[in-house]
Amino acid sequence: MVVAKSRASPDVAIILPGLTDSTLAATSHFELAAVANAPLELFGSRGLAGNSQLQAVSQPGSSSGCVSWPTGRLAGMPATDWRVAFEEGRVVGLPLDSLEGMNSADSARFVGSVLQAVNSLSNAGDPAFRGIPYFVRKGYRLTLPPSTILVAEAIRRINEEANPREEHLLLLGERSRDDAGYRVGFHKRSAGSEESLETSEILAAVRFTSSSRLAIVVTFDYEDGGKIGLLERVAAGNWRIAWKSAYTDC
Image 1 (tube, one colour):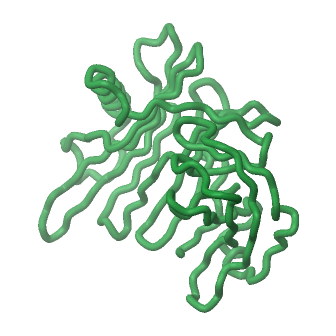
Image 2 (cartoon, rainbow, N blue to C red):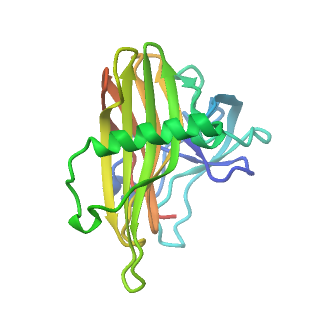
């Protein structure tokens, strides 16, 4: 897996899925011959965003004392709307409808569906947030007949000047044509101060060609680092985090 280091640069990070937190931190040299010059397909929220080649690879620097992935550079300047890449032929990209791109009526219905799904959950979590309403920060809709899937991040805040806190809820809901509403297939809460809070971002939706399994590529970010994860559909209406990368902090 390859992820963009910034949207305006061909520089990328090369994610090696077999490494754990401890093995990545202890590794100073990576065997990268197999990935050099690999043909890549680039994906973003709209699905396939383009093709490229991983031309150059380099080992992470050790002078800063942080843990990082080896880096590479794509051939040419890729499309700016890509976020994650896989070796050519490994996955098929699936287009996501973004909340930001919906018209006012569709966005209102989408937000209503997210909040209805949130309200169907138990009140487990930090009791300090009970009774405080959520708002939807970001959301996407994936249409795969006969199912429609939504994935969103809902937030609520305690705006105390001395101790501001937030609760972030990553939620995925799914419904078929016969369902009245979305059934929650996955959710994950994180609550606390800004420094301790886990936040998430959706990079792309894909289907793996070898298994036909659906997955949402997600980042899990903290104040000083983060991980990449795969939220996979294991059965209709049932999703789980099937994999997380090692933690990097630079």
